[in-house]
Length: 395
Image 1 (cartoon, rainbow, N blue to C red):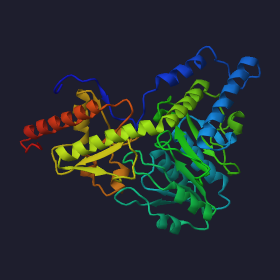
Image 2 (image 1 turned 135 degrees about the vertical axis):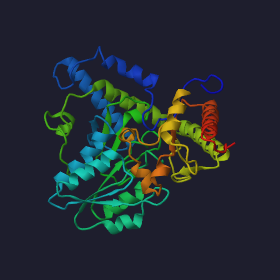
Image 3 (image 1 turned 90 degrees about the vertical axis):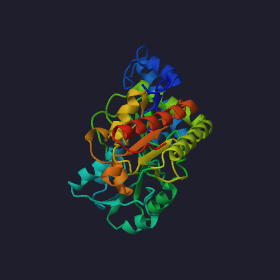
Image 4 (image 1 turned 135 degrees about the horizontal axis):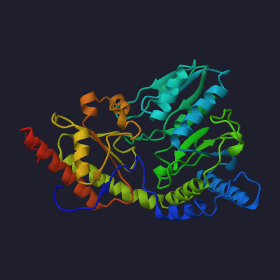
């Protein structure tokens, strides 16, 4: 352990957030006492059916859409799969062309790669060094065979926010379906679906202090889409399987609380982000911020430690872990495969730079003391490694 004692510091909130006490309290009755299958027609089943309907109403009100447009899924990955595969297979008679970007979540990229094996053609738009697509290039890529545009709202690794208003307007202009992966923005940025020309939108509860294993796919009325899972008539016959009532309740409560406190929480988290970025850039001259400087999520700090050949992110994360500081290098969904981040490579980083990148993602549980401790510990670790490898200290 380095330095004075400090409670653990969790800085990987883009991977998952801690279930809030208020959300857990709301969920508990539906884990044991109110256990009935909501598809059953006796009273205790109908009671749970009513709970699901009320939660659907709540979510629709928050997102400013119709309740019939809200479909519960097992999370963001399923919602993305359902959106992209469902639109593609239902509209293949119209065309076989999909447009997405090179920095999408793996659940989007992998789904598009799968569809390429089924006869679909996919355009992967490049991004600039900040992670932004070119709106002009997007529009120029549309053909008479284009059936879907899928562009994320904000990137999970570098935090850059795309202009989904403009993208939605272009999609509508060309009569093309538009799906946006809003997993990283729901609960953090106000989403008003009456102002976004999106036909489909994905979100996941565990990114905003709700339970894991539950998400939502918004499907705009009159969208032609096939179901992903077949079986019973749950979710308007669009997603078969017995509903997870406790998780649905938890999602609704978590979204309600996040949106209610969105200004206060984000203002506080933004102040922590400014503190973290300024301290790292001031004390580690080799550090470079990835993503857009201002048009980014307020909880995301992606840093590459350039020109420090003796470092790699795996070693740094391990040593930070021994000091009870928990961070990542990028997407938790990709960290186990050991390959360089496709997002970082898309913004121009080489393999060596990718291997020197750390991602800190903040939450409202973090404190200013957490930031001080994290940066000081990181500096000490880097200097200890510099001494071990007979290199010059950074400070």
